[in-house]
Length: 304
Image (tube, rainbow, N blue to C red; front, side, top):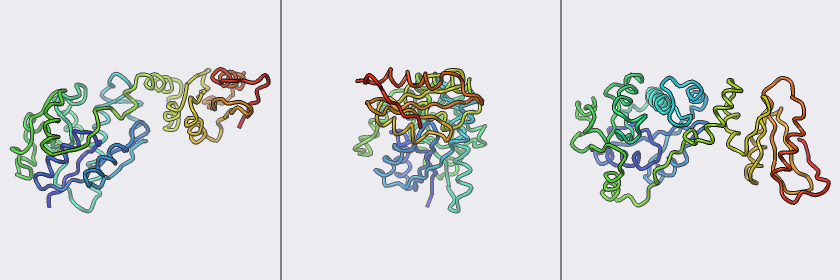
């Protein structure tokens, strides 16, 4: 049986890529990558609905390094899409080598021109070259408008049963949804927080102030309102869930402030300096009170 390792996000394009190849009696092994900035939750749900067993690979540390210093630049936010895609393909290639069961082909759900920065023809060629996978990445949705792959030349995949979709329009994909009788599929959306403009601003400032920051530092920026004083970071939770998550992500040397006799947010203090700056606790206390309601005359605050 022909086996395909398919890069699988769980979005409509990757679902359709799986369906197209399954029609050719090819066994699909979907693989998804998770990092500090995106997860595989959607891929897990979609794979389950398709009856596929998903392989999840965590490449958080490697991914953080390319986010800090991408070779091929970024999109509108802090998203290094070309470098990220290249890392995924290199990791998938390594994964395939480590498996006892040989894969006959490597495929993705990419559509030519759907994402101008990372899916234009020059970007696709560059990625193949840098990953040392020239002619070895099959893109079933756009295969007929791309150079013929080695798999097609060898007859492993029938080119006439592949498609010629390109551009941002989703009309062709939606027609395939009907053809393959797909009942449910996710709406287009980026699952990567690096495309978010507000988070990108926070992350950019973190990189500037703390170049050697780690994954925990990046993740905690998502858990509340962010404030800085020099190299001291303050995170003010916005709801009960974030209060819990802040304490869960807290490091050993972090300070946490919580209201004792009134409802209010948890505040986390994280210093990236050897010396604690002056008035740090006072600033944290003021932030806690600022975002609290129904403050008593004598508010009591615990410092953990």
